Length: 361
Image (cartoon, rainbow, N blue to C red; front, side):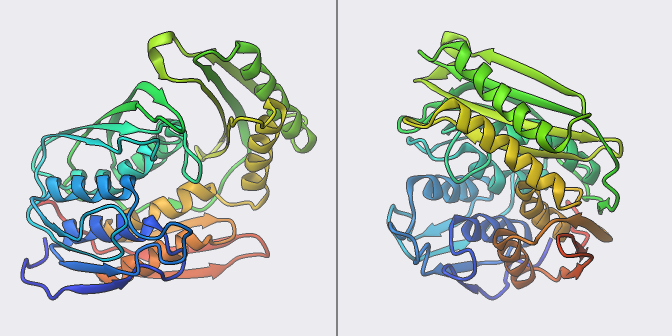
């Protein structure tokens, strides 16, 4: 681990994507590299600038994981400073007390606990299926299997789902510590082997809503991939399996080279099930059409792990998203990792990273 008496790194929270991702990635790297940070202009360009409850919950969780000191930790604060201590394994609980995304809490905490002194358990409460964030199913169905190639290992249980506006969902994640992360090479996608459509309803919504979403997702996919094998997994959550009513859909394509790419849709009041399914199908199609090995969600979530890994990582992806550019900027600001983006074709890029090979002491 890096020396604990490093100078504080100042970060402009309004740069590039300008959202909570800057906080999450900066706090995680701060913990792992023993590097104090201060972030100003937090979410400055948003309609409700400053920390929201889910951002605050994430920072408080990070401070607990590394016995760190957080200043400015209150809702609507536009400036924080964070001084990390030593990452410790254990049992941790974080609750947004809103429908704020559990996924985004996990995005920050998971890399830190990989470098803890023992296995860890996280209990996270909030929204499992939220706007402007991957659905919780993404971690189970795509992130977990794909990051296993880096050496990431975790067990994952959705205890119950929670939706806007109440939240109340709960997820448990058991994380194994690593000595060092491996570099990753995702250079050839292979052919599409199978597409699985996971569609669910919860609460007072009838099962037919999930079936409609699944059918319309399949219809959209078949417009582009007529001969691919498509499997539907359509369920109604048990009564104790959710807080409130909601629905969602996730479609995952598996390729002959083991790549997993996804699309998703979230049910909302006033939005027909047909549209939710169509949106999910189209999102998967878009992720497949660019020719890369990863979807848009995974693209930016690999950056921090690639920066920490030992050796050179290479990932073929579609257009480089603003989230990914932001993650690269923060990683280079706080670590010695070096990134390079090569344009391969009109729609395809290669992200290269010489990682720092961080070792768990």
